[in-house]
Image 1 (cartoon, rainbow, N blue to C red):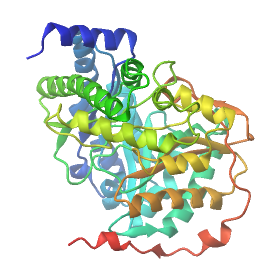
Image 2: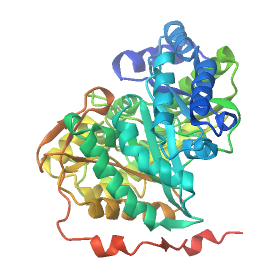
Image 3: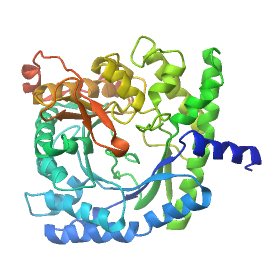
Image 4: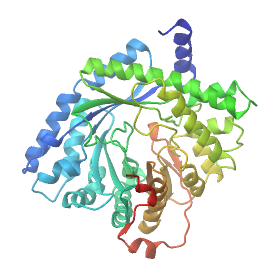
Amino acid sequence: MINNTEILQTIEMINQQNLDIRTITMGICLLDCAHPDPHIACEQIYNKICEKAKNLVAVGEAIEREYGVPIVNKRVSVTPISLVAASSVTDDYVPFAKALDKAAKTCGINFIGGFSALVQKGYTESDRKLIKAIPEALASTDFVCSSVNIGSTKAGLNMDAVAEIGQVIKETARLTEEKDGFGCAKLVIFCNAVEDNPFMAGAFHGVGEGECVINVGISGPGVVHHALQEVKGQPFDVVAETIKKTAFRITRMGQLVAQEASNRLGVPFGIVDLSLAPTPAVGDSVARILEEMGIEVCGTHGTTAALALLNDAVKKGGVMASSHVGGLSGAFIPVSEDEGMIAAASSGVLTLEKLEVMTCVCSVGLDMIAVPGDTPAETISAIIADEAAIGMVNFKTTAVRIIPAPGKNVGDLIEFGGLLGSAPVMPVHPESSVDFIRRGGRIPAPMQSLKN
């Protein structure tokens, strides 16, 4: 039973502490849209998305009005297109991306994810065609997001795919040069990708999912930051308990929104993703939470320990507030989307190497990182390999969303606007990784994979 105190606390969190529901994401299975004729397949994809998601935005807006909680994004994720398009007789998969984009515009949603391939153990011909199409697909569409899963704890790392993806990212940046390489902001490279992630750009509707589901991603770094201001100087036991209680309250709102959206749309409820998703707005930063624990600037010594505490406490508090928890669930550290991270990176305290260490204890990985435009493709591939290795060995999802900003150098700032914010261009090591990446093949799965 929700009492008056909880209602007042929720109003304060919304009005003063930037609480919002980051996204309602409808996952849609497109396997039945496969057809040998690519034109028919694209038409069926468009029609099915429009049929399933036609009321998504209206329902989200109605819930916003009735409950007074902002729902920032209404999104759709679909079955990886490499699976859906495999039956079509064509070498060009860009029309599939355009069909997704057309459906997104018709439905009025913010983003659509699933121009994706799963190649952790090897390629199919369809996977090759999709990966080849990514640069043009992202350059010629507005709302389409793409992802490639290049490794897993069970399969190891597909280093042939890692090498190719470095080239794909460079080409995507080139084709979107007039927007500072914006296409790369819509491309995520995963290890251990999950099937029910509601967050973009990496969302896709996994083959183990049902026909159609509703997944909700919460937010609330500002709420956690505010709560920690009330326990200044207290021991870490108190800090952890404070975060747990706060995460419970945030997740309760997410559960309510998920259930309402599920009931009104007639679509089963999937999961609530507990991730603290920051924004560029002041007061809505994960970095500032870590600094509130006593870190002078995010990235200095102690940052990893603080982030580990935050990530764990968020999960412990949130899991009790929702009937089904999934997705990525933890704390995100996207540099361009977090004003505290932007400040720390601009000052030089937060480095690429420190971010890589931090990804060992938080959700996802190197997210929205801008690097110089002349960074070699092999260096980008090596950065991806390093991050994927962390995920592979530690049974966790890791990812890389990196932007080699055309014409930009270390210290420059690229502006994307909105939730994507701005990113300071960070330095990378000049030493070559070419010979390492050119080996190709597969890094075998670790001993930890032998669990059966």
